[in-house]
Image (cartoon, rainbow, N blue to C red; front, side):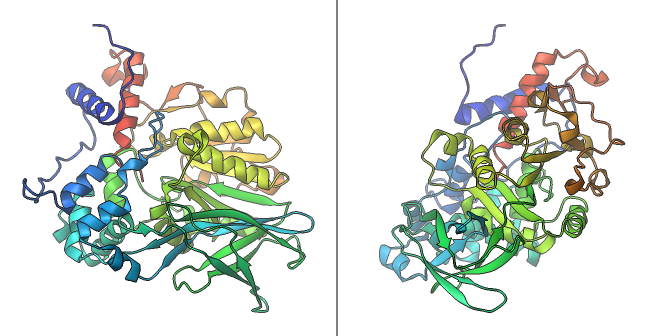
Amino acid sequence: MTLGTRPLTGSAATLFALALLTQLAGTVAAPNPLPTAAPTKVQPQKRGISSWASSVAQGLPTDVASGVLPAFQGLPNADEVKQQLNLTDDDINRLPQSVLNIPSYANWTGQGWNMRIHGVAYKQPQATDEQLDQISSVFISDLETSSLNDTERRQSRNMSALMIAIPTPDVTLNFSLVNPLTGDSLLLEFPNKTDDRGEFDKFIQLVGQIPNNNTVASWPLFTTGINDGNSSLWLVPPEGVTILSDIDDVLRFTQIYVPQNGLDNSFAHPFIPWSDMPSVYAQWSQVHQNAHFHYLTTTPQPFTRQYVDFVNKYYPAGSFDDRPLNLTTFDQIFQIRKTNLIRFYETYPTRKIVLVGDTSNGDIMRNYPGMLKDFPNQTACVLIRNTSATDSQNHFPYNTKEFKDLPTNKYMFFRTTDDIRNLNFANGDCLNSSVPQNVTFDYQGTPFDSTSSAISNIPRTWGIIVGQALALMAALCML
């Protein structure tokens, strides 16, 4: 039988993945098979909010290892939200204005600070608990929302509420930057109104008003007249160490590679750290007392507040990058992590940057070694959690080919937090010689290679195909 070369996209790709995994189920026993989705409680003749949420679930934004394109069209637009909640324009206009003011950073230019301010303006419709539970039930179909405890129910409703926030375009915003020592404030007028997705993102020059004392400092940044628009701006000097980290499955226990678990750990269970990574970051923060922490996730902007709250609870506070929704260029749409990485590197050309991520994220496996190639003097170290070696439920293959010909003392794949705990980046540490690497510069972390006796009769090519199918399946759960 000859396989065609026509690429599969959208729902066809998902169906291909399901069919392929089903066919192989008799050969390889899945350690945690996907549960059967619970039947919808919506009457067939009426497309209610559960039905609408189901269509959203089929296109959750993703940055999958196989290069599946981000499906932003899956998130509801303002008209869909208004229709499902029976809201009029007047109802929306009467809602209070909210702002997600994302923790950000500023670089020293020699004359002053170049401050990046970004986020989104939105209005939050008041949905009933029943409506929020109906949305949640689609994403946690293996769980009964009625069986959740109070903490889990609050988590599921908060995540569902984020999905129905309505962006507000053409909003004029002002900000107040507060000196944490004196309490004095500076009024900052944002030069542009919010765009048609309610987003704002701009560097603003502040000349001669705040000196540079070569110390990382956090200044409160308030959105004028908005109760929930508070954040922080990090003044980061030209020299020093920045630890730039992904979040899912390296700082947070998510299990993106097990689709239903990933959904449950996002929509039902409160965010918790992976292993004891908070103690590692706390130690790094003490060892590098002038370090700056930057958190870069490809999570779509509507969910960013949950990630910020999680990091602030368990890890050193820092600045953030996420996935905005109003993307226009090719790189912004298809390579948002790379776009954010390059912007940060170009903002701090003389800082030493430590990159932290995991193997289940394909763009990390491309972009992190890419930064080491393109910015060798800035990239102090690349640390990658090997999720395949640390979670028996992960059968998500990863490709190490981009690390070929890179200096082996500048990157490390780790399994436990103790592997990386005592690294001193200021001294040039990156590699723990006691940790085996076994990098083949090819596909790894899949049970379908020649080292797996249970299925050694399956050609290696099929292993790669199945790995790509699993990556497509992960699109259903990545947020």
